[in-house]
Image 1 (cartoon, helix red, strand yellow):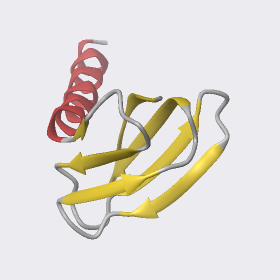
Image 2 (cartoon, one colour):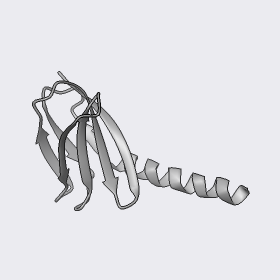
Image 3 (cartoon, one colour):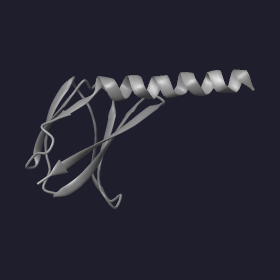
Image 4 (spheres, one colour):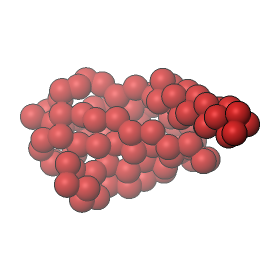
Length: 92
């Protein structure tokens, strides 16, 4: 049982590492924002608050400027290998 607790901690640490390496700014914004801390090959999905997919793409560089027409709360999902993290942004 203690081995399972240790494994869970390791997995959570990986997700926290990915989450802390990626920043999205400005937040809130007017539809244009910057993603920084990406690695080539990272999968990025942008969804609205209902889970409808707005955009999906693969990062090609560390920094990416992105524009969306959707308004409201958006959820950005980042996947790097077997790590996944989410960030929320507000588009006014």
